[in-house]
Length: 383
Length: 47
Image 1: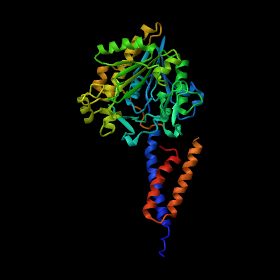
Image 2: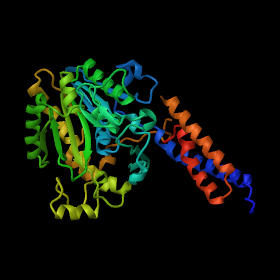
Image 3: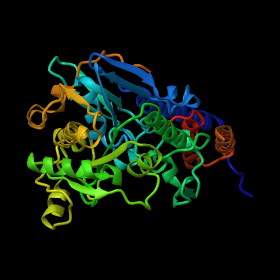
Image 4: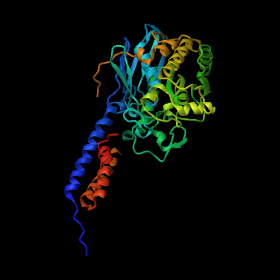
């Protein structure tokens, strides 16, 4: 009878040490996503935390900065939300441009650049997504923004249910949608972390008596709701005015009504739960599409992809695509649409107008790039 | 709930390491070493 070789303890110990070393290196890499993005708010913005509107959020990973700028003259209140889905960078950057450039002579402006902070602490490496995107500023410094995930980090949302039953409506969705902020509105005060976050944002809208609120997104070019405004029926009149005005500025944009039976989304639930005029906007981002090829920071920033050129030639896309979708173009669309919305707010809410100044114009963003309107920040990022 | 999650990960991690030390075949030990990496990260709630 052959004798079995003895188990090699030495080999096991060496392999275990090697595993721990690899885990350490990987952990350092993953932890990069835990360093919050740093912003340089324009003068006059006060910094609060979302937990001030819903205290149970305090000390949790869902808490996120809220920046408020109060004008001298009374008026309405506008809320800009970026980062509902941190993989949709144009939303975060458009909110940042308002935060870092806006002055508000009349009314109030509230900016939440990282709405779902729990979705910013991880990304999707198996999709080839970069962890960060970078912008070189004129002074030689670099601005860094995390490129997170569409969904809340599973370390905050575990375990996912098999089926997510939307509490307010009973609507059934795939279980992973419970980690999607834009399926959880109006939120649940004692629900999952994402449901609590959604509840806190609705509380902010109620307590601050927000008149007009934007939820900024991006979508793949082959998705029908892209380069689009989605408006609650209460926002529809204003959205129609803005759509026509944007067409006049050479910025074609679709106007979609918020479906009444599609529940949990900002454009539906903000409007049903509060008095706000909710607006969701989408730009076209090839780095989110299923047709894309090599995925990296370059694709996120330029939107250049050969497969999308072919798809456009075959008429498969819902945006005009001529070889790229630059981040400057996507951000300029969001920024200009918000500006036009705010300029027309007084028409539908008399006495609630808001005046914003210092916002870069569409052509300026296209010509000079997003980086021209980002402010330098300290090199050391908070952890 | 997070406590349960981490407890499950810890138990599985301990079993994998136990297998690694009892295994005689080098490649099976190496396979166990690969499995250890994500389990350690999940135990530390790093993703």
